[in-house]
Image (tube, rainbow, N blue to C red; front, side):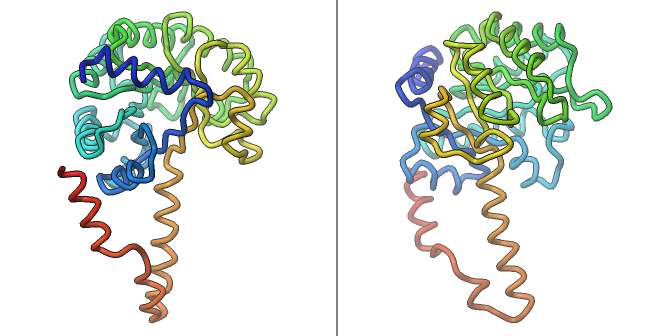
Length: 274
């Protein structure tokens, strides 16, 4: 599917009534399982992907090439639109960010997320002007061939400044970001304020506000257009593995070996090949 057509298809999911739930996969099998469940689009999770490689998220420990290959696999296996959670755009300069967007388009991605993070733990959020310039560069490179999500990580980085968060998201929308995203606003009132301030640009929420997990229906009522899960499904699966490992240490083979059958896994893999 050509980039412009893929862009329109993916944006339609954001602008329709109810928007979409877009879960994040971490390997080929998880992508196939999410497609089998009926989701219309899936995403990578930079945190989950980094963890599968034994690396940390947000510290430039994963390369652009590695993430592109990871995201391409999801699209090849499922045929679904794939949104890439591409941290700060994998580059120090706005030109680097533009090159990453071009590479994502060439790889067939439907969407790409660009954060205002820096990878520097001493100054994790980029200055306002730098963040906006990088977003402008991403949008100019995208040229409506890939959906650009503009993201600020103020809340995740312990900067509980709602006014600055809205200022950044509004500026991202003004330079052309298609979707806006500020993970974990403190509560529903803050989320509603964000949605209202940037309307009509669609807003993504990571699971819910920080204080309470809401239902999909409650988030939609608040005006959210896209719900993503970040590494939550991955950590859920790892939680099951941790419990199985604890059971195995005590000698409980039965508890340690429950789960889907390998025949089921083979069936899903065969569908991906077809």
